[in-house]
Length: 471
Image (tube, rainbow, N blue to C red; front, side, top):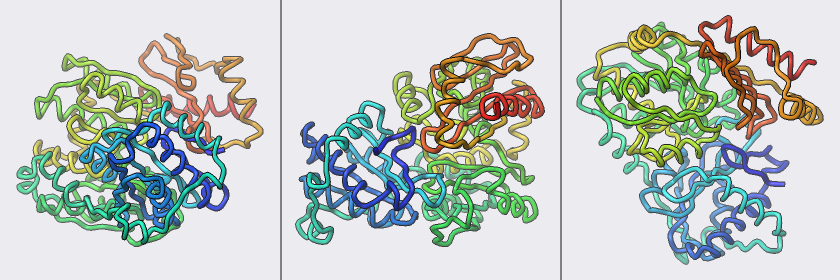
């Protein structure tokens, strides 16, 4: 069964991620587009550097073209945000990128986007799954890729320059030029280098890059920017005098930041920095949208500036929908994805990184100094996280304990309320919180807690791990 989670369809290569299944997804989307009468409105396809991504993108395009869909095919690996950008520019009803984002190297997948380049919502993904359930291999139409090019059913495009120009036009490039910053980029063997380096060089930054070669195994690490995976970036930034280190995940829609001291800046803090900067230093207005696993300090910043903060379930489609509903200024999640009003309606690590460089340039303050300013004003909070694997046979038992028995550990803190809207979230009266939810893309139970300091937050995560998985 092909199922879409919070970040698209992702599957183990050679098991579920096969040519036949990629074609089934493409045929399902083709059927939907035919039913909606939008086959001539264009469909953008892109792919990342993962094993089979380039071939799978062709398999996907061949099916669409055979079904009469006008295909715009990006013929070189690109960040996922470029696919979303091009879909927005073309006003395409649907688009897709072949990627498994930050998943292990053994995985690949497909992210599907809807009108305006937004992440597909549950309505669309349910339609795709329903179509697939009623399809067989005999129902799949396909045409040779080169033949489709000759028949002008597939047009090869390269929107890289337009994407880069859109970011350069958005940020304060003149302020960046005057700052003379040194920047170190770690694309984690993914696709961010060309776009991000071009933006920063346009700002006359001194840019160096590590972990840039094509490596389908991602150097033996998860292509997910974290304190553990960016250890080389941390060391080099601290010892070689860089102003900022920028890490991006496999398809460049998420980021991880290292400050000038070599400290990993948690994605929560990245959101806090940018929202505070846009409100206080640029004088912009607007609410913030965060998911349930993201720092509540954003709520304090919003309230201090007379703005609202919205909490939504995990999945960027929920963030982009709420942003559109309230014309919000910024939206993001604790896993490292964010976007700003006026840019694309999805995560973009290239754009977010560029805006952080602008922030340093405009304020004249180092990242550590900006964080000290924010914590001095709103108080400090630490977010602890823990991903717990389990055997498939254990999931019903864990699910029952959380959702049916509704059992809770004895946290030792007064509880204000408990929510099961997306996992289990416990709100404490002291402003802290705890969260346990099943991953939508991997066989994991994700645990989070935000408290006044690190020991408290980590103790709560450990409590949940023991209570839900080890009893």
